[in-house]
Amino acid sequence: MEDHATRPVAGPGQLSPQAEAVIAQPAQKPLSAAVIAGIAQIVEAGLLSGLGLVVHALFAGPVQNEFSIPVILATALLANIAFNAVRSHRVSSYRTALPQIGRVLGAWSVVMIALAVGLYFLASGDLASRAWLVIWFGSGAVVLVAYRLGLRALVQHWTNMGRLKRRAVIVGGGTDAATLIEQVKAGASNDVELLGLFDDRVGERSPEMVSGYPKLGMVADIVEFARRTPIDLVIVSMPLSAEKRVLDMLTQLWVLPVDIRLSAHMSKLKFTNKAYSYVGDVAVLDMADRPISDWNLVFKWVFDKIVALTALVLLSPVMVVTAIAIKLESKGPVFFMQNRHGFNNETIRIFKFRSMRTDMLDATASKLVTKDDPRVTRVGKFIRRTSIDELPQLFNVLKGELSIVGPRPHAPQAKAENQLYYEAVEGYFARHRVKPGMTGWAQVNGWRGETDTIDKIMQRVNHDLYYIEHWSILFDLYIVLMTPVSLVSKNENAY
Image 1 (cartoon, helix red, strand yellow):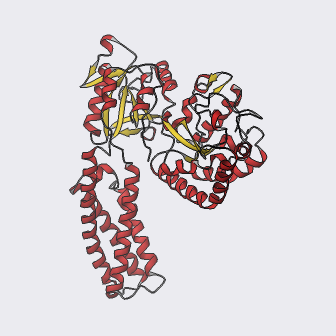
Image 2: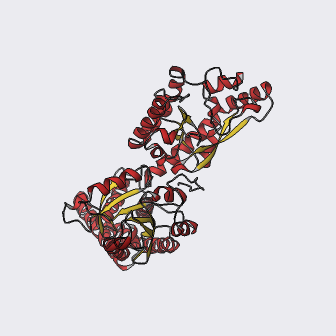
Image 3: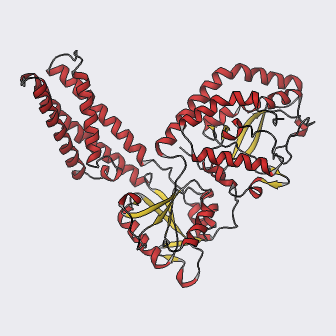
């Protein structure tokens, strides 16, 4: 769902030629394995339940009683649980043919035998009316085989296109990184696309090429590298004993919207299996997760589109009146467009109703708007205080550049006490791990409007980070509902 636009250079400096070469290569927009598996389960359960209803109607009479429909639907659900139990709803399983079909048919057989035994006792031995079960079992097996073969072909197509591969980089070098690379290539070549390595060490301990993959730069360079090309995964090849190096690495990289995993292939400490996740067959420890991913990303996308479309319909009269008022008071365009920081620090252009005199527009937001600012028109004062000037950003939401709820997008040159925001607040860019929003947790808590002090921008950032760590659809809904309340009760800083 995330679109990776051209991002501004805002890192430790110029990247290496090797890194620039990787950035220049086109990157496929990835598909979520979890979403694919979820959709595959829904479709499969729908096929089995629909087939059961049709077979029952054809061979056992119309589905009229209160018993048949729940039994058929429950059987399809039980089959889905059984397919998951035999680990057949995974992208790695979808790529196989006979192993996948064998597990699915075995699970389907067990489920249908259990159903037949249950109906035998419930129906007092009346097996003649249960002949439809045999037909449902046979036709279901045929449908499952056809469906799984079609699913396999589709997944193989996506795999060949590279759309199921997570783009990954390795932190570390030398022989330890070489061992990790070989393990990843052996067990996850279809799921992970390695781009290269980043390491702060030099010389023999960190050669420029490891197992065919180039060293792309220092650890600090990953931040700039990830802003200019999509990265999904950072795998750290460091022993747990290197505590200081690991902490230094996390301090630099936690601002990025990526999964960070610490490889356990070098560790002599052994934890329970529940402590590990896996990249292919490589056991890893989860150090940081992408804030919103997989199905949560889908839910948030749907929420954004529904709320944006609804708001546009309901608020269109307000927007039309505002546009007329702006035109009547002063010459110039109705809308004002401005560059802002977006997801992962990319540059986006947001829409606003123009609230300033045309000859005093501040496209870079280098000077904050203050109380009784002479640049602001009479209409502008009202629409800024009520946030009506932000309503055109609903079009940014529909374009996928903004969310309804998220950290408010700031202009790149915005300052507090003559310091750029990212210079004044450590970890400022961590708020860009999710899409910016039209409203947010900071705004409903009164932190909107002028940010003339470092404390004010720190309060915004702290509230934004709290939102990211505690995100849920219900949290988004609560913020949306509280936004009108906050506009009335907490707008003393809005000029």
